[in-house]
Amino acid sequence: MQPVERTEVEGIDYGWVMQMTFVVTILVGAPVVALLSTVVTLDTWGARAAFAIRVGAPIWFATAVSLAVYAKRTEAGDVREPADEE
Image (cartoon, helix red, strand yellow):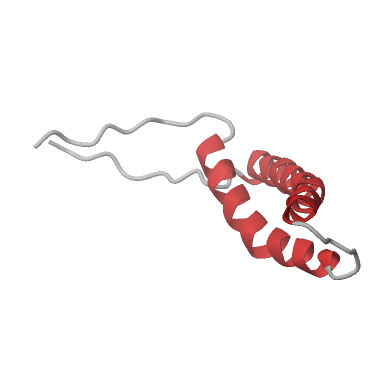
């Protein structure tokens, strides 16, 4: 069996940023969109989808930028494992 290849990430770990953006946006953004939708009349499915995109996109963008800044300042997602000795 071939060993799994590992890479050393220098700078921001964009994979971590993307994964955390997805998780945080689902956990925080979806309830925010749902709450905001209660104060707007959305008669059709098209109107509902357009509303979700109009409100969700800025939430996703703000989350991604915030997590990228966080990762840059704290080296978040930078998992260092000891090298395997063979």
